[in-house]
Image (cartoon, one colour):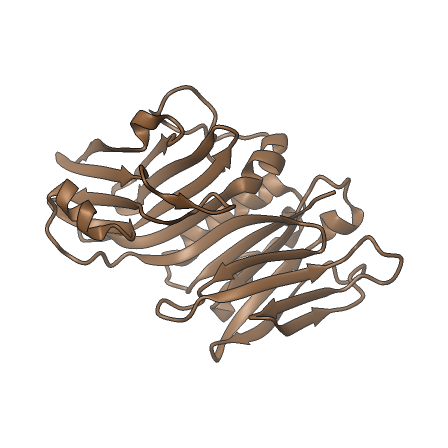
Length: 302
């Protein structure tokens, strides 16, 4: 996954544009969430990325299937804003075997963000089995696809999303597969006359505070969530010294090996470069099962 897919275009289903300018990244991608799952395809490990995004036309969906063992990458875009494409399927062929992608967003419920809250499904069927399924309409998905009722063992291994705010930036995250969903909030005021500081809260409890941010605009620390160590990386250079266009970047990694993922922190100063770096890091790290990663882009609003 080299960059954010473009949600622009006239057709309902098309191959995504893999090149985006910095201007597009700084605006359109503010309304996008990328979820990366690890599952089994042809009895081999496979990564499936789901990108939920939103533009003036409505919500969009991008699906990418990356089977490294077969040197196979497939990407498709769905524009639910076009009524005829709010549900459907797409069939591709690999090694003389059909892989079918099914989706139904016709009654999906959305909140303020691009990711649906419920009443939807996205599934991938291979050899008559449901190898990947997300959403709460599982019964409808099996009925539509005719796939064997095998429970999908897809595991969420990485998430990348964007949040916009003036001082507070929040999201929700689950740091282990069966663990609870936590409210994650980042507080940072860089516009005051005093020395800026950074606070990370989990479920309204402060778990990390960084003072003298002008000197510590990049760094990492370890917090505990569900009695598990979570490594936190941050880069707020753009907030303090940039032109006001860039975002602050935060990464939460459940493995202490996370320092390998950002071996070149200076690359984070460019949003598009950071997107590329994180995407490559996701694929490299998840093949080694390093745990769960959450990358959060925090954009300051006027």
